[in-house]
Image (cartoon, rainbow, N blue to C red; front, side, top):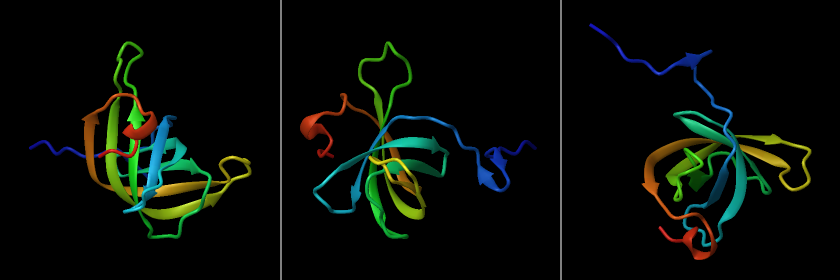
Length: 121
């Protein structure tokens, strides 16, 4: 019998150092903020942000993922998540990194972010 497992290192899901835009907001907030991912796994994402959030804050995330240069409309990962860790950084524009455990993840095809498309669900 074959058993499928998720590759893990030290009990954690494998991280991929991928850098792409992430738009996030507190659940039910009208204001979207923008950050940049540092790494992502099948269970969560670490991204740079300009504002800290309290641990256990619930966020709505939208991550723009371009798979290949010839793809005109990138895919978008939409999910909710819980802030599980914050890290202070020295960068002036993004002084904090947020580690968010993702849940309710779905992948959708979406025209490139811009203007009101970020806020539409």
